[in-house]
Image (cartoon, rainbow, N blue to C red; front, side):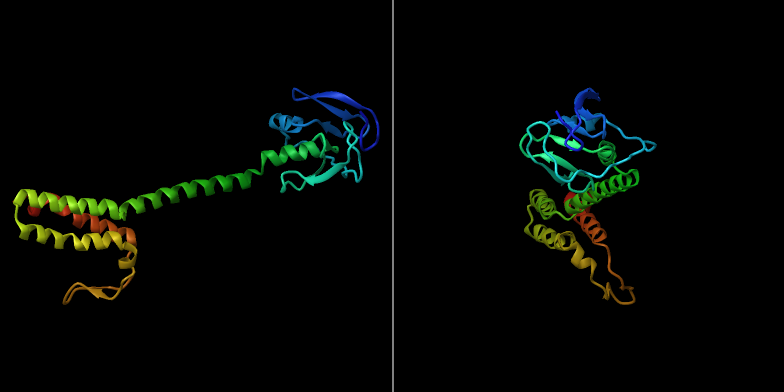
Length: 226
């Protein structure tokens, strides 16, 4: 095969267990379909490696099938323009481009570190969001409230006690179901000479307070009749 850049003879050369075709004159390399990705999986460019990248050729023919080689940017954001054959899907790299692509695959350590930190922060945020959704779950809190009513009824057989428990669970359920809305309320006073709520309360604290009130009868006289 002939080099598409200088028309010299391409010589077979083993590159990381893959046989590719290289031009000894301009140091360009031809990769048949899937060979480039196989080489990049094994090739690691070092920071001390000198990269003498020559300009990509303008018009060239595929050394394998003589079709036109079309320029495109590798991976859309590598800033490395290479030539590919639309017919046989081979790739031509000018001198230095293989090292540039290897460095692109290795990534930037600083950017990779920031990306990893962002992924960790996102995982933590998702865990907190899941915990908050469980804390403000209408289904779970309603099930606990219903269980309280059933327990009171079967233990006492007293409609008044059941109604009393029904009134008791209203406030806790409101705190759990509407934690954010109630947390934004200010200017509320709990009675004469008692301090007012002057600043918003985080919804999570409102929901926790609701659960404490909801579960209190399990440990008090309303359930156990003590």
